[in-house]
Amino acid sequence: MTFIKKVLTAVLLTFACAAPVMAAEDNAPSDPLEPVNRVIFSFNEGVDVVFIEPLAKLYRFILPDYVLARVDHFFVNIEEPLSTVNYALQGNFSEAGDSLLRFVVNSTVGIGGLWDVMGDQSEDKLTGFGDTLGRWGVGPGPYLVLPLIGPSDFRDVVGLTADYYSDPVRIAMHGGSLDIDNPETLYTVLKVTEDFDARSRLLKQIDDLRKNSLDFYATARSIYLQRRASKVGGDTGAPSGAAPEIPNYKD
Image (tube, rainbow, N blue to C red):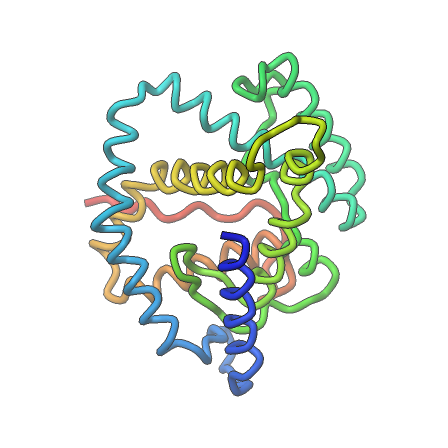
């Protein structure tokens, strides 16, 4: 898995660097790789419709809401150490301290993060190296669609790679103190499960977007770019802060 991720990242970065720099119109997305992106997007859609979505529906049907809530809290909690590091790199030491405190309290009193004892846990408060690069003034670069991962951009590809290898949870698993067999496999399974749980929480939103979008690719691209611009700030003149929610269209 690690080798594949390295090769995939290298190929994507090569394509992105080799792509011609196109002068976009005002408010137009930077998507010079759109033909390739659309092919990958269609592949991802096929995998999602045939395999991932049915499993996600079964997952949400079988598990009671109480258990699903514990799972959601757990996955947000294990992202806090990485957020702590990135908030510190961004110079936001107040948020870094809050993130670290949430992790310590929820991991202990909250029994491994299954309960949000602090009461202020939120996915919108999580941050990664892609956000950090944006705060440092690095632009997003061209829009990319990653196989099985989905919407991204040049900056976030670098951020995702950095997050993977610098995650304190992964480092702790490899540190030996936890005495974990096959830590890389365990960490990868953990992250895949986390992504699957996140996908299961967007069943209705994504289904509505598919039904109501004239061009689902363009809609997904627009939502991703707006969310990232809002989260990082400065990319398109949008203020930094909590990312907007995915629209929930009514029938």
